[in-house]
Image (cartoon, rainbow, N blue to C red; front, side):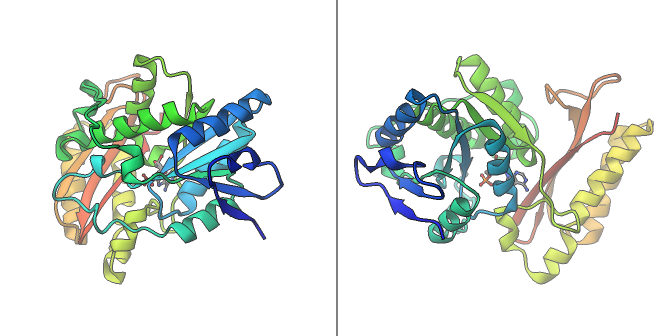
Length: 301
Ligand code: AMP
């Protein structure tokens, strides 16, 4: 049995002190004070940012954090700034009670769950945005998405000042964008990428999988299978990457997917065009009913 308590100002001193206890903090200044207290004891601190609807993919990030730190903060914040006007912020799945239970079971010491007002007080006008690496793939289809992500992640990194922050390779472009931002802004946190956790049939775990009907859920693994097929063709030296991607789009459409935002093969570091002798990844984003599914995998070398 794990004790979960909500911090009233000052009780954060106890966060993580007794085995199995977890504290919920809602205020950035309080989080900073908690982390300072940990650091003064020489403890290493990890941050795992999430938008909640916790699943095994998120838990794997917490497990990776355990290997690198003594204290773990997981944030729960559905960030409206990273959703477009026609996207699903209103319907995004939310269940703080269940999320905190799962995170505390995974050994998280603090859940940081600020309100919108706490994160973006009246008068907030700052945006952190990157060029170049945010332009292709999801950047082409989700206007303003990455600026919303980098703004909130910059704030989380400043508030939590973690030694390490863990992000999933499931959102590979996001991982590269955050690495770039941290480098460009001299933010002193290590950014750790963690492998994608999949269902048994290959579907990448995602909070948005909850939108899928039973029929769509049966079709959904086709995205992973299709990306695997493209990766194999590229690895075996296909004459045309474009043709491989075109065939992949056709096969997804035949499987029952709706709009296909992209199927693309890109350089794994720069997201520029893939070239010989450099590591490459296959990326895909496609709609299935109300869910926009994304996935990516490495081209075997
Ligand atoms: P989200 O709550 O969807 O914003 O995701 C929070 C973090 O969990 C991000 O770093 C994601 O890349 C990561 N994540 C989401 N799904 C998975 C997954 N299936 N495997 C590994 N990491 C994931």
